[in-house]
Image (cartoon, rainbow, N blue to C red):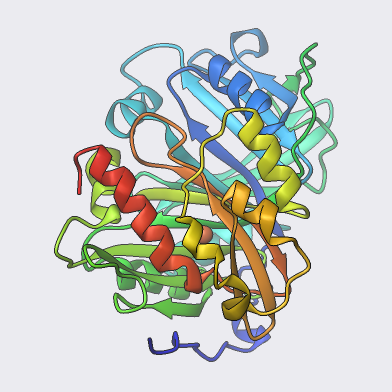
Length: 376
Ligand code: FE2
């Protein structure tokens, strides 16, 4: 297997036009936000943070905001049919609509990206309430997915103007989920480089690492991937496209069911993956599994690690090493009935890569699930 190409990174000054502080929130459009909020609280240990709906003056939708450490998820559902949110759900099922990015200047983020070719989604808009003001703006990315830039330095409310604090008697313990490590997009045939160029040219990202179909293929199916990162590395967006194989690529299955390009997985960091994954499994979350043989020669492949092999094997946690350290990772099964978006749980111990050594074992596992659905 040839090493993945590592592309030289541009200097700091070339990226100054779009400074990004990190992920602000991830918004899902879902069929039933009340029930989804309960699921994410129960299964993943999120806490109630904020609410918007008819009681707060929003007439067409209801949104619940959940928090866990630095993670903020917004679950939004339409109150009537025939609007943009209900059409989104009809086409895509439950899925990620917004990858929101925390910035110091949302007006400048909009101007600089639109000037470089981004399609506007939301003109810079000032939102105010008794806690201060927030400026937001937005641009389109792949499929119906959008990026919203959030400038909140003059705001002290629970989430955004228009939301009220949401207190609830049900507060399950958190599971140690910390922050968004990366968000992966699936795009169509021959579209990967188009979106790589989009993140490069309009957002000033650089290509951190590339994987071709030789790196990511099994006997049956293949995909290609390039990881785009902003200057300080706080925002990482890998982009996948399907590649030809004997059978259907997992990316094609996603595109068939999502109905367009979209977010494939959100990778969430933890500081103790054994604790986090045992909690999630006890709360009913199902993960992809690898054969027990994966663990037989694990230490030969990755060298010495701090963790005992036994709990990793019991939980199905994968390990990979790069020049800088190692990482532990595991992938949930799809989080809704359509085989579309899922989560990765990741603990980094020095490694800045994405688990290339696990791709084969992992994709064979995905193919077993795909075959069960009759889509391989
Ligand atoms: Fe990932």
